[in-house]
Amino acid sequence: MPTSHPDSFPRMVGDIGGTNARFALIHGPACLPQQVETFRCADFAGPREVIARYLKDCGSVQPVWAAIGIATPIDGDQIRMTNHDWAFSIEALRRDLGLARLCFLNDFTALALSIPALAPHELRQVGGGRAAKGRAIGVVGPGTGLGVSGLLPNGKGWIPLEGEGGHVTLAASTAHEAELIGLLARRYSHVSAERLISGAGLVALHEANAALSGRVAEALDPGEISRRALSGECEHCVTVVNDFCALLGTVAADIALILGARGGLYIGGGIVPRLGAFFDASPFRARFEHKGRFSAYLAEVPTFVIDAPWPALIGAARSLED
Image (cartoon, rainbow, N blue to C red):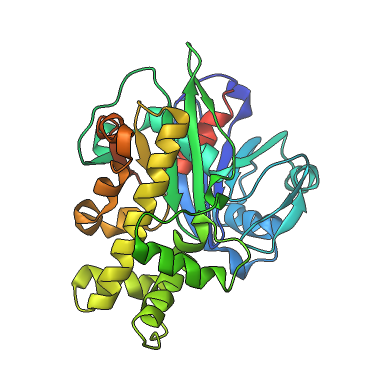
């Protein structure tokens, strides 16, 4: 880790998603995040309460600086989460916590910042291709929502992107996908990528596939759908997760083409890393390369699953050095 500003320790870093919030402390220059704890967002009224609980668990330590990735757009002092009900002022939170500096950034911007610091064993390549040095990097990941970011080279380092690419309009690549999206369009005025490529998206795909086959879907949560698919015990769940992976391949390829991500496309979030070998054998990579005249271009772009324990915390820590 960088070593500047030695008087700014201990530092706190965080990663707040729509479901869970994770925090850690950095006790000095060149130290990695330690004392990592995870909390359910639904158990707390807001970030002040969950951070206070975390710091109490750590012995009432008082951080000096803090950086937190959060799953929502950052535009000024007021934050309102997209997939959770927390709303707050960054400055008021800084004062309440007694911090000299408090930075919030989009959670996938934090994830993107971690990539140059990840070790080779923390990345699992899916398919072929080779990362080109000094070229743009794309980042995508389904969890409670669908995060999208990237890194652009600037000669001396990287410029992280902050956007809301998970809310682009989802396009079908097959007649089956067109039917699935058509069903969802009856329920939502806009069928975004996040509607189907997320935890809630797994449930939506499960219900839509059942409806297309004339059945009523059994009520299953995302974890149970994934479990049944991985075990092979439910053919319907296998279809659902394969649809999910194929659609992710389409969106990942779009990101790679938009950014010119010859440096690779990296996949994070809470779902794909847990799919393991199922994901590697899924339609994801074939769909990623299925882009007509640019199929050969994408065949040279490597795709990696991020298999590190707390990458967004690493990225939040790196953001404090900029």
